[in-house]
Image (cartoon, rainbow, N blue to C red; front, side, top):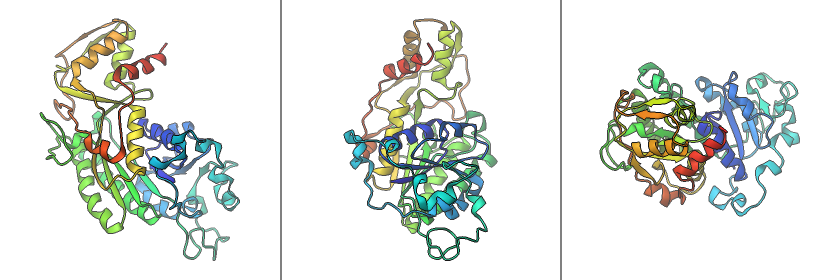
Length: 375
């Protein structure tokens, strides 16, 4: 399948792209022109970079690279992917840039893996063609859209109403653009922050009372996009992502900070850490998201989390032990984050039924994988 990914250079974005490539899919990675993370994607077969900010995402409907090739409507879903049966991944198959029909529009300063679609505007050699914008009746070319792009996702910006509200418009415009280029499935990366302060198991059909602007706007996207998707004839998947960790995460995340501090023999001051918590390793998160997008999961909201829910203190102490008991820690010294004191107790039975998801990486194994990169 041909899949558009926004937020492609993010922690989760990079992991999902790896999962998609492994499944034999083509990825159109939407990146900001000034994105430092694009170097991780450049020059790789199966990845086609589209330079575009979220503020102009609608213009991708006129992107030549998304209009030049037909939608692969008969391509297999992830659950039927040959890559899951040990067949060659996309990296062993010809990239889209090898197509003669695309060689003109893909060339950019000698590069065939980076597309500046804006440079195609006003071209006079497309008149009458049916495979590019500007010709007649252009053929569209994408099957699914994964929307991970969101400005101000960090804790410091989660209470900024102006910044957070802009993302609603970006998400809805992305949904419309996805429909315009022929996508039949759209997955939006929601958040556990949509639930607000919970003391019971979090189920998708439960009431949501978000505290932060971040959670409120993610929930608003869920409401409005689900309604609009019906009119557009596109399946809308809303993935409420819980606490994901692993290599490549922000250095200031709780897990990364604990590991780095303990290994240096430092001291960690934390909150009470008595709340229930749930961690999901990055590769498991990528599998869950890819499964929801590409399998036959029906439209709706899905919790994306792990199977191991326990007091946060137990996770901290397990990290400390795996770091050889180095360093020290103290509870009750930090204030809660923007969402307040939240307990994460997700029910993932809906995800399991829809995408056949099972957690493969235990917390202990995940921390050991992170420690390997630090020695």
